[in-house]
Amino acid sequence: MNIQITSAFDSGNIEVHAINGTTAKLSIRKDKDSEFFQWFHFRVACEIGDELELDIGGLKESAYPQGWPDYDACVSEDRDYWGRAPSSYDEASGTLSIRYTAASNIVWFAYFAPYSMERHHDLIAETAGFEGVAVRTLGHSLEGQPIDCLELGSGDKQVWLYARQHPGESMAEWWMEGALEMLTDPADPQARLLLQQCRFHIVPNMNPDGSRMGHLRTNFAGTNLNREWHEPSAEKSPEVLCVRNAMDESGVDFAMDVHGDEAIPAVFIAGFEGIPSITDAQLEKYHGFRNRLAQRTPDFQTTLGYPTAAEGKANLSMSTNQLAERFGAVAMTLEMPFKDNRDLPDAEQGWSPERSNLLARECLATLAEMIDDI
Image (tube, rainbow, N blue to C red; front, side):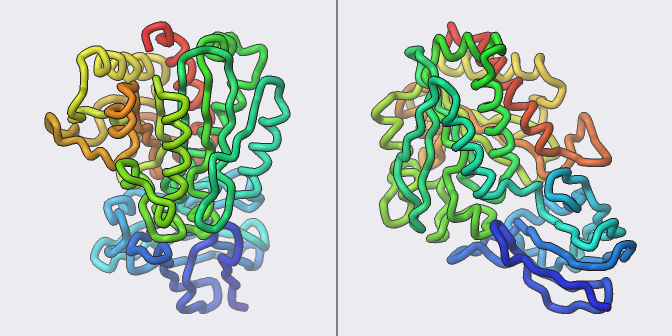
């Protein structure tokens, strides 16, 4: 009997071209009104013991073709634990071949472990129940979904954490879940210190439309939100507009924009080198955070990452550069891998929701160690 494949659900994305028994020819749907594509998420109905052969083609034209070599697809049979399915990439044909023996009648595959909008709303509702937490709706997406912001802490230092400008980078919201769990734990001493000295503004998902639609990088209008921070608009990027307006109200001392990187098999941060107004003190604090984080966790490193911008050449349409320039903030972009972590490989899960969650705690503990200097 032929297997059955569907992606008609939250964050689903796949096109089915042919099915023959347990073999399927597939491709990834582009983001709406955009040429970006890389995210996939689909369900296979099959028989227990089926040897699934799933070939996703057309990937030479994907957003980041360098992300496919040495990549294994994420797989789950309960949508809770996500492992990795052995995968291989043929660069000549641009085809990712996934091989998996089904242990259930239903198997889910995804580019990374999905973080659904339902789970997002559960996260907001659960966190809002803690004493001292306020929830603000900063604005709405083009499809009318709320841009949620959780606020907590009584200190004067304004800390902004925000994620999923690029909706396919779902590890970013797994990171947010870890951050919120730590900050709402009354027994955590580092969290208590941070809440005494900081006011946190946390936006777990800046792109709910793209998240629900199964996009990699853009919102409902096909806009890359992380290229809108210099002049966001209600027509193309209301998500950025409402968040930046709220930042203008509060000010920003420290900011972290949480992402995932398709090609680099490591966790790293990118800074704001190249902004016109950069100061030695600002840069010293950024480097101090980066170096302390590398000392705290072996999951973070400083050798792999993006090249830095030349003096005065920073792209101010990107949030990290814009916030560092606009507020004099210590701002940074945190990147986690879609692949495994080169330095600490995990054959079962690769980089995972669990490791994203734990990394958030290390990032906040690092901030606690140097908060007096921010």
